[in-house]
Length: 253
Image (cartoon, rainbow, N blue to C red):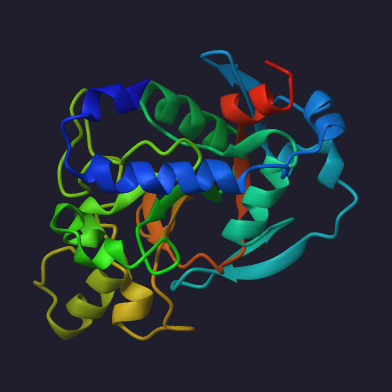
């Protein structure tokens, strides 16, 4: 697993406890019948993946037009907030997608662009007050915006956001966002502020919530598909990935 290469990272000591809490929270979330009949739109490394926009189970659900993120871009689709999207996956012995390798990221990005899905929830989450006070006190996680991210679906750490991860060719986080736009309105020569930027909370936009969830965005602040931090209450489509731990608990692996 990707996480095994990170055992020397001091953040692991803190986030392992988060992982155990997440696994405990998954007890009895799944429904064995739903797990048995779960869909699969593609596979990677023996894991099945489901894109909500192509799920036959959601075809009868009303599509709504929502504003997504601080740019308030329109999205017409069946959507959920981050927590409810995760619940939908977990009932099927899946979890929101965790992009632990660049090969997996490349495949998910290609599928997302092929489906013309502009905004997708992943399992990425920042260590925040919903996780625990230790997120704010442990030096290994500071600053949280850079060092406090992890995949809630697997418990694997996300590399520091301000540099390209070991074994990756490029940093997947976006290079700009609304923070850049605000700064450049005041000073056209202001440098870009990369993602994650926690702009909604820092700039007191919309509901002024912390941007603690990781979404994939295409043609939002830049034309290509990149990682973007966003407040978890926003409505988006999602991608589920098979959960080895839940399938094992359900007796299906």
